[in-house]
Length: 259
Image (tube, rainbow, N blue to C red):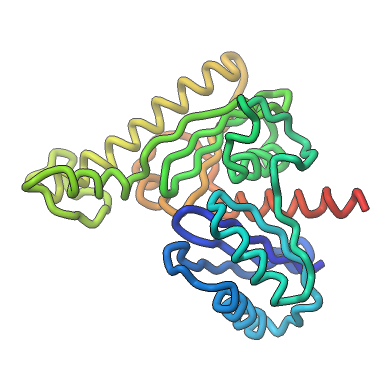
């Protein structure tokens, strides 16, 4: 099996290539570049040439939370191998019961991540995606997607401070040298990085107590912004940067088994 999995998010289009069971490479294209389907197709073809893979050997599956990008990437996929890709929607019959209300309001990426977490680590579980936003997801022991929380992401919080105040300027986010900031830069870094670490601990505990008050409920973390938080997160967790890729792979296999 040669499979390209594509996860279209608010910040980037993330791609992964599976050769059999192995994820052999990953790549990222900015969502904000406004690339055409031909440019995206060329970018993917270049990656395939590096891997010495013929496009006609591939299948492609896509999930997206950016509707105006979905069609562009879908067209790019068809340019690559003249096949219609699988585009994951809420209509798919997946091995997780969506309890969101209404069900179609939940981002499909949250369902994909939750499905992967169940397959890899079991249920119940709390899944946290640290990206453009911090998105918590809760899965019950009966493999039900219960819902979650959405919080502005770290960079969004930093941008909001810079844009909403007269004297504070944009700051590069990094783990602060001092817990108590000794200047404006350190104060913003401390407030956001340390504050969000405590926020994660608090929300996770509330979710865990609600989902499974007497049983172990692991915290599964994914997302490109996790490296800013994980070194100071004094909490047990499992980190899997490829959670969405694994979820898309499982959905592809499930759809293939129906044929």
